[in-house]
Image (tube, rainbow, N blue to C red; front, side, top):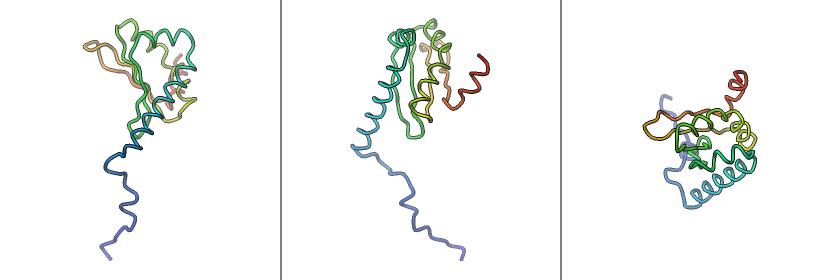
Length: 124
């Protein structure tokens, strides 16, 4: 009785390697979420994003909006817009994160999950 065999062991595990269809679907999802997010942004946020490199990526557990800032001033402005950005992204997908990356050598990226939004709203 000590040795139990799980008949569903292989069916429950994730595939070892993604197929080309998986990769294409992931890219389409990332592009669609990025377009919906950008179209929901107001003029100020669009202007800020236009000065940055930004994209949506999916690591399998959650979508992440990554914003790479060109300078400390833009980084600070985007950090101040985290709550509105998280609200917009949360309206599109509930399991997502935002990562604001300062210029290299200017510090560490700041990351926030959209499900943490209530904590940040209480502070503002």
